Length: 377
Ligand code: OSB
Ligand code: MG
Image (cartoon, protein in one colour):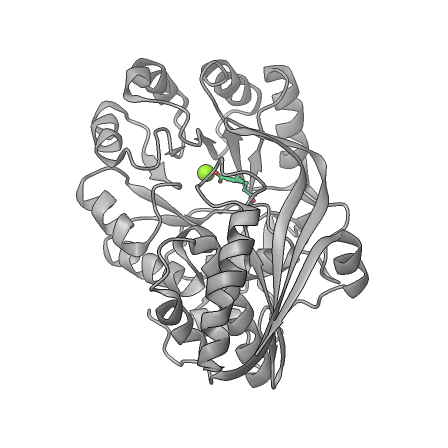
């Protein structure tokens, strides 16, 4: 359902941005590189009725998408925040429209929108989940497992997550790190819900390798080809039994409609940052639900801010597959919220407090901050 009850506008007095460097509990390796520290931008909207928090989910380098931290910082400081401050009185539902003249930069826009939305909902005492249309109070939790040294190590790591209770495993793959890895996990654990994520590392020339994965009965293969290879994904889909799920390619609800019309995907990963915000994410959810296309909530190694918002989003009715909404400690020994998300019986609770429903730990926030700016009207 579309948002049924809009939020009241807030008077935006200023915006604070911080770059944070948060150590990861273990290196996270994908086909595009290894991260040991999460670099992320935290947004604080300063309003007449109190603060709101958001997160810009860029990474330090433009490897997953064209966006990256310093680029997001620059466009936010020079263009996006001034436009919002000029508008002064802003309803969360107007943020996308105000920022629409600026092409792209969806992660930056999403983080700003979330901060304003959080401020507005906190002022009303309304939880984000209720606002977005959540129908569940907890969401099943899947975990995204990075590329490991070898298949035996991967099996050990997956075993740990299964023991913790995760209900779905996703393993990252890359050329040469695919069939043996997937076989090892299938052989070790049998019929667990299992899927793979290629992060755009293949081309159509790899169709025979990708077809070898068919024998593992995967839930799906995520983004095998490049972001703009929609037609090639459609060609590949006709050659594979494994359902194709798009991540990087789905930059908006419209992009999803086009990809579905072309037969490029039969499942969609929804990430609010990638599509420009939680409101566009709801539109994407609604479109897929109307089309009978299953969706799940992706992750970008979110801090407690984005993790709370993802749990709320993943509680919408069309999210019929477990998402990458894992416990905070899967990535972080120390988070920036006072009550980081925990895994309970394979699920993550949807916060019930106003707005995001989590409180910022100001000491942790300061400890991880490496850059800060405040813009005021
Ligand atoms: O492709 O889903 C992805 C992390 C960073 C960038 C892209 C992706 C990922 C993940 C991690 O897979 C998901 C998570 O936050 O748990
Ligand atoms: Mg992905």
